Image (cartoon, rainbow, N blue to C red; front, side, top):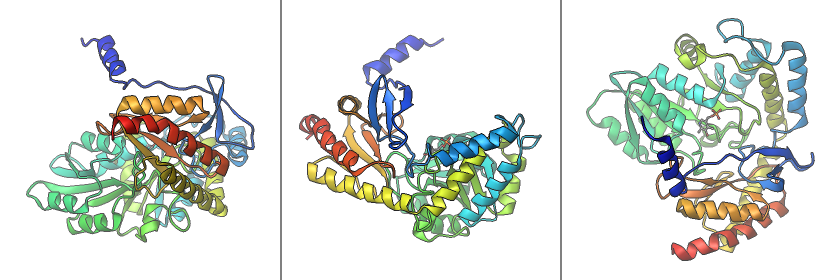
Length: 394
Ligand SMILES: *Cc1c(COP(=O)(O)O)cnc(C)c1O
């Protein structure tokens, strides 16, 4: 038996032990990016609530109305008696939103990615993934039994070379649309060509692109002008820009039917509660009707970048509301988080194994509900919090 105490002590020593914060309450209805943690009021720059919908009253109202008629829980899996009216309507609306024949709801993005990877790849095949793909894509690929290959981040030519090399048939080329810890976009047009040339499914996990990118919030595929033929398997999550919970896979009817029959993470789990689906429908309607939310988050992102560059805060090239501040060492990232917290900002340090060794960072995320003053104040504090680190690591 391994010593759990020793392993935990090692994590502590390396500044890699994770700690949960408890959000005690949210401060004032009008300013939804503020929360109370350990008795302190913090402006939250760590959530994925890009459009500011998670605490929108319309979602809570939709949830309450649905709970009043459907109850809190769905009480069974989708294939038994748990599939309800709200699920059905939401799937139709998600299919229309993504311009695909059908959409299939999942209880989480994690479950959706396991479903796609294990159903479309298997023994005797290869699954290729970007080196920085989300953990759920990697876990799904491993679980599929396929030979898992990871290509250099964002390098479609590297993927092409791997596929061209001798080996087993290629089943899947999978990537995040927007990388969750880096905020950059995958080279989707080139990846689509590579996948098509080798007869592999292109799987795009657009957890951080949907609702945020593209003229109508259609995500990174809309951003690049790619249709369902170029990217036949689209995974979207509902707990980020849509402020709700759950996930979906969108594609043609055959793909969805195949997942319903084969995907263990779809079949052997209780259906998402209907009130959650009802809240997501409200969120989708708001995201479509209130284009200003998308415009606003991009405006604040530009403001943050301009301010940070002027103040000497290290940045990457990310064009999305995910703005990593690279600090390399876990200790530096943890120290910067603590300094920001003391100044009233919640910006959580991201450390290995979520990012590669030496890749510790603060992951700043902008939301439509932030104010200019909050963004400017964060930049000012970041400049202070990052300054000592820059001297240590010139
Ligand atoms: C968050 C995330 C997931 C997981 O989605 P959940 O609904 O939170 O399980 C999958 N892929 C990416 C890229 C993500 O960022």
